[in-house]
Image 1 (tube, rainbow, N blue to C red):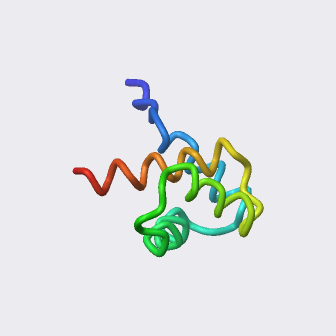
Image 2: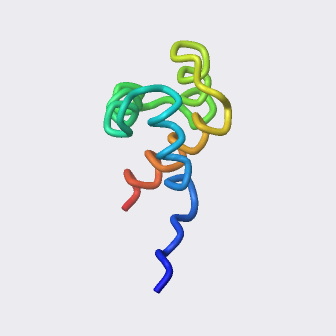
Length: 70
């Protein structure tokens, strides 16, 4: 049986960990510290302060915000 493909923002996680050298838990903790900011403000912080690309930052923020609404 083929392995189920990860979809949505989590599909970026292996690439994010490899590219930036930190586990996803690290980035989610960074985002926890940005509570009260809007989606694009959080993306902006990851890009400006951590050198993250837009796609990776956007995926992390989308995942993080979705978890908060569960």
